[in-house]
Image (tube, rainbow, N blue to C red; front, side):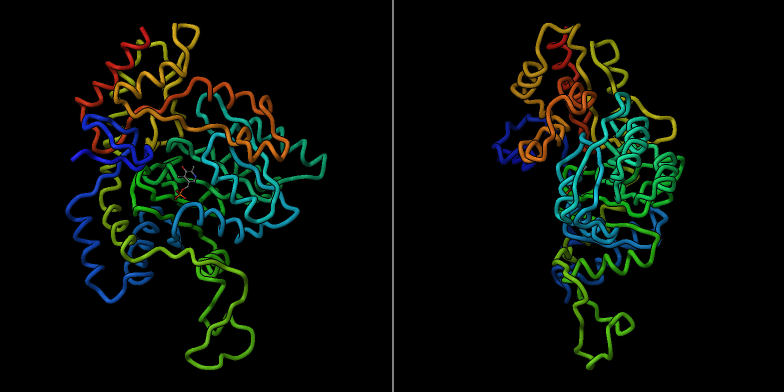
Length: 401
Ligand SMILES: *Cc1c(COP(=O)(O)O)cnc(C)c1O
């Protein structure tokens, strides 16, 4: 039976197709899920607590809230940070649309910070000058969402200093970065932020099928997050207005959602957590191997800031187009035709038709636009064997020389 790769759009894939990312599910993961299916709880229950505890312990953070996706996580994170109508959210244009959409869900305005041409994360210089300008204009952001692109942390110490100076909140979109670290502190510790968000979509570092998590050290934010996850309802008499009517009683205090994760998913997540370091180590091995094998090709290879330890969610190459006889698109399509599941992270969010409606135009963020014309994500995932990786390299070499 041919394998199906949902991440490339339910294409009946060739048996030798190499996707850009892929989950790794072992027998222990399967057993953990089956145990839950035989138990009394299948929605939010004890497995959620175990998974939240496992992630919180790993990251060295006080509170963790499991939710149905990182998109849901970003939404309630913004609400917990009091983002609302008339407020402004800034993020990187080199991200998945969800990092910006969460601002629109809250009726806030969204704007972007151009990227650093080495890390592909939002540029600190751009952020500094845009903040200085916004202060003059009286339009400072309430929330900044730095995205740890490809698994490499942003320069959080500098971001935290700017958040102090200008009074905005920081929500790390660490969808790519669980298992990574910054200045030797695990991503998710929230040492330099208010909130951190993870994604457990199958292409990410660990998976729950669909799922996300919100982390924070602030108890107030935590109380708000657990309430927003479940309809804005509380069963805690201490948080109620007036007296409890009895043991059946709950109160809806604000407008929340059903963003719960199931215990079935959480059991998978808790089981995957046990192999997180192994997953990241394998990704490092593969990334180092690409660095070696691709060094003589007309490519810009991913640069690593010395303060960071990436989780290597993505391995992005940039074509040196002046040294290649083909276009970016030709190289991309030829690799796909050869069974190499390359991808492109990301189409700059500001040039999406939906965002152009807000007045964003091509030319507004030149670094990310240049990057978009050159970037290709090549396969990297735990189960990628060296023979397949060699095929990726050979296929690239054939097309670039
Ligand atoms: C995957 C991803 C998301 C969304 O994650 P879901 O769990 O699929 O909702 C958000 N931001 C970034 C940077 C991502 O890569």
